Image (tube, rainbow, N blue to C red; front, side):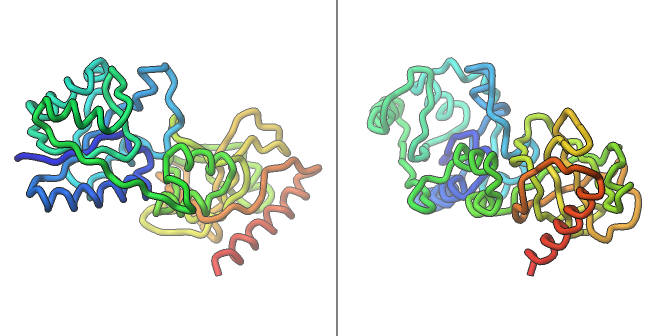
Length: 288
């Protein structure tokens, strides 16, 4: 089927991406073409520079989030990274039946690094492909971008992150055995193993909800090294309020709602216990 396509990595599948996909569908109706999304199996920077940024979404999360917006095609970036813009356009046209290409307002592609949209238009005319330029998505007078969202996550601004994503940021992982300190002081926590390429919010304490066995629980989450008990690595620990039972080995989804406080070191476990009690109260209050 002849297609209209857009291209990008689309980490986070945030409001800016969704604004682009809405335009993709509008153009698809106008041209009577099938909307298609082309993305990559790995972040381009991983191959180009040897280091990719930590991801807002894992591969599986990105795939799931993209599916409602059209046909999704994952390309092997290693196979196309050396193609010029013209060669890539010819590939889309000849191999993928793309007739119209909708470019993000600031998107660039091709090893020859064309400078502006007019240059892409010129190359496209020579190929016999039509290119359209999408409008940008602004929130608070600034473009919505994965880079902007990553910066906000590093600052713990979870409400703003959720606003730009258009949904709540989450972490998913298997519950592992921890040091057991939480249970000793009356606040058992689930220690979550998170994929190493997934971006963690700033260290601190958060209001969240946890989804386990298709049930949802109000949750307080601590991200950090737990300096009171002397951990030497960052952990993600979730206290599911009023949960009774064994969580070890279960898949847990943590959905972030608000930031409570930064992580800090306490003089004793009893001080830590008192602070966690306050955190739980704060968590409940901020839900109403």
